[in-house]
Amino acid sequence: MIFLVMVFGAALVNGNEIISAENPPPYVKQCYEGDPKVIDCFISALHHLKPYLANGIKEIELPSVEPFLMDELSLSLTGGPNGYKISLKEMNIYGASNFSMSRLKLSENGKPFEAKINIPSLKINARYQSSGVLIILPASGNGTFLGQFDDLDCMLKGKASVNEINGQKYLNVDALHVDLTVKKMRMMVKNIFKNNRILTEAINLFLRENGHEVFKVMLPQLRKKLAALFMSISNKLLMHVPLDAFYIPASKQHA
Image (cartoon, rainbow, N blue to C red; front, top):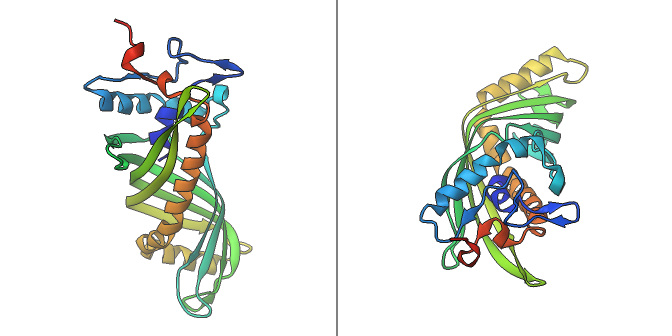
């Protein structure tokens, strides 16, 4: 997700000092044009970044992705005029830095780049609001939502371009699509409407029995929000990063 482009974006601003390709910071693992294993190098460079993503990189004003923040998801889970609707706000998402990439295909001949990433476990803590009727119970209330999504596969597809500014080339992500599948999930709420035990148990029973359906309802919004957020963060980094500082062209390689 954010991770594919972070390998390109983890580069080169330290205050007002431009860090050169000859003197890269510790979080950058450089790759070289012409290397027959350049894809493996990009994947290795990406994995090299994991602890830096977890802790943040002050030099480029990159905050920690633990937690990763998202604003809101609004879900309509049952139909009818009094359908059960929930809103998840102020979402804190944990586990994003513990990823592994199994596949990377670079863009060729105008085709999109592609990548597959697995996250072993992603945990969500959010403020919960609901309205409507669940089964026969009025389900309006506030509380805390907790979710855990295990063995999460993320398929990324996007397009990038190279722009020249003041004689330097910079990479820009122009479009990004994110798709998600999950093998196992657990969702629950707590502290619902003055700790109403009956309502809390009814909501948690619904979430246990319909977890995959709830995830399907989440998915369209989740895709769009993640793609927009990852593009924004990536391009904020990339605007400071000359292309030939992390992907060393043949003309700058030493014998």
